[in-house]
Length: 474
Image 1 (cartoon, rainbow, N blue to C red):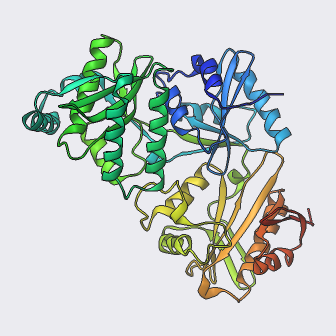
Image 2 (spheres, rainbow, N blue to C red; image 1 turned 135 degrees about the horizontal axis):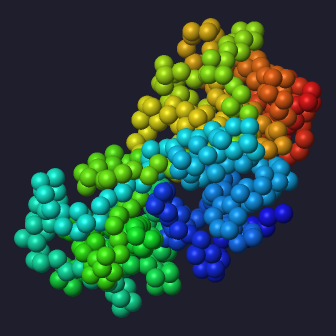
Image 3 (cartoon, rainbow, N blue to C red; image 1 turned 180 degrees about the vertical axis):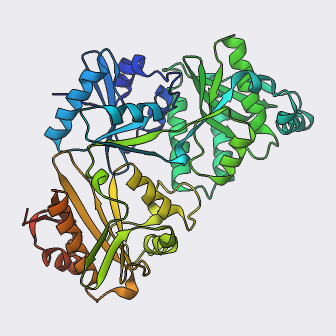
C-alpha cells in the first residue's frame, strides 16, 4: 500500500528533484515555490513508490493527487486505485493538462474521467525575450511606465536581495500592508505565505530581487527557474512609486538573463485568482499562452446522470440548474442566516477570490458538475418554475458513498418541500446510481434532523457539532 508522508521542509528538499514543470504542461503548481506558498490548509502529503512520486492535497472538499512522475507512473496509478478503495476516497487528479485528461478518458481502468478547469487559476505564460526588451508598439504602455519611473526616481536599481536587507524589507512590507488594508482573506494569506517563502528563499535557491529608490526598497520579487522557464511566485511593489511594478518585472528578467544567460525562454507569472484588476494587468503584458489546470475525477457516478434529468415528487420538481437560475443561486449562497445551519458563510470562503458577483456561484456549480465532484439540483414547484431551493449529491467515494444536502429559500420554509426533495434525491442515488447515501446536520438543527430521519435515514454517529446518518434502505 502507498505510504503518504506529511509535508515538511525536509521532505520537500528530499523530493524536489521530481518537481519539474514540463514543456507539455508548464503549470506553476508543480514547483518548489508554489508548494511552499500554498501548502497551508491543504493537508499536503508526499508519496514515493518505486522511484515514482505523487502529491496528495485537498482541492475543494476532498483530496486530489498530482499525476505520478518518475519511473513507473502507470504502476502508481494501479496503486492509487487500491489506495482510494482502502481509504474510501475518490480518485481525483490536479493539476492535469488537457492532453492528460484525454489520456485518462482512454484509460481502460476507468469507467469515466470528468474534468474541468477554473479560469481563475490558469497561469499566464510570456516570452522571456520580449519581456527582457519590451520592444515594439504593443509594449509602448510598459515602456511609458518605466520611463515615468525613471523620470521621477532616477535610473532603476535592480539587484539581488541580501540578508542585511531585512530591516529595509520589513519597512517596505509594513507600508505595503498599510496600502492594502482592505485586502481580502486570500490576499492576506498570500502575503503571509510570501513572507514564509522569502525566509526560505536561500534554502531553496530562489531568486529574490528588489528595486531600490534611494535607500528604500520600492518593490521585490521571488522567482525560480524550472527547466527553461522562469516562474515568478511573488511580485510586490509600493503603489506610492509610480511604475514600480513594470520596472521591477522588466528589471528582474534582465537580471536573470545576466545571471543565467540563455537559460530561460518563457516566463510563468501564475494566475490572476479571478481579480478583475489583476486579470486586466496580466493581459496587458501580452501572454503567449495560458496554462489551464484541470481537476479530473475518475470513476465518478456523476458521469451517469443526464443533463436533462427531472425528478418529480409530490409538490416539487428537481431539475439540473439552468442559466435562468443565476440570481436564485446568488440569493441562496449570500443569505448568511439561512446558510447558518448549512455550514456556509460566503464572507469566509477563501475560494471567492474575485468580486461576489451574480454569476459567481452559478459558475462554481457548473465547474463542480463538469469535473464530476457533485450533482446539483434546482428545486422547483413546477418544471419551468423558479428555483426555490437547491439539492446536492456530493462527496462521492470509491466505495460508492455519497452525501446528500438540501436547502430551501426562506420564503418557502415550512411547506415540506425540503423533506420531499431530500427523499427524491436519496431514492434516485440509491436505486438508480447504486450509491450508499449519507447525510449530516448540526445537532442544534432540529428541522434538518427531522427532514433526514423522515426519509429513512438512521443516526450512525456524532461528534461535537454534527449528527451523522445513513440511509437504512441500502
